[in-house]
Image (cartoon, rainbow, N blue to C red; front, side, top):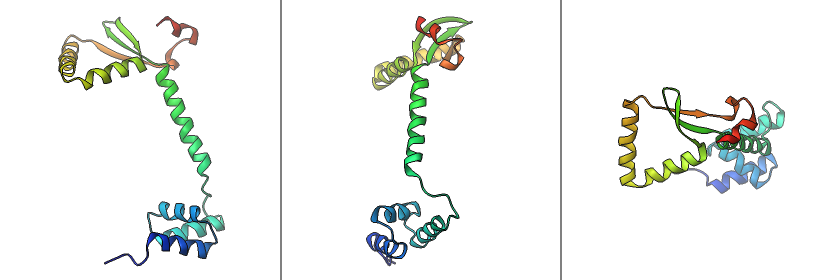
Length: 144
């Protein structure tokens, strides 16, 4: 059974009934997953103040701030290979991730890395990730 209205017809119905523009009608329809009645109901609730209005700019800014914070945390993190509290090697997290990605992309190195990981686990090596929040002060982080 085919859909009674095309997406454009649904958008036109929303525009006519609610007095809104194409972009807002399309967004409301997308948020309602294509359900015209749900989109109409949602728009009426927003208009009557029953639900909080959509603030796309604020949501986008919040997501962007979260991404920037995560990237900053990764940039100020270190990955250390330790055995019995002795640090064998310590790398910045971005360098460690780039190295791991490069090794994983090469089949021969991938097998060698897996054998090394098993050997490290058997010999009680530990992998420790330290973020900037765990450092006593930011001046001490330059010793890497």
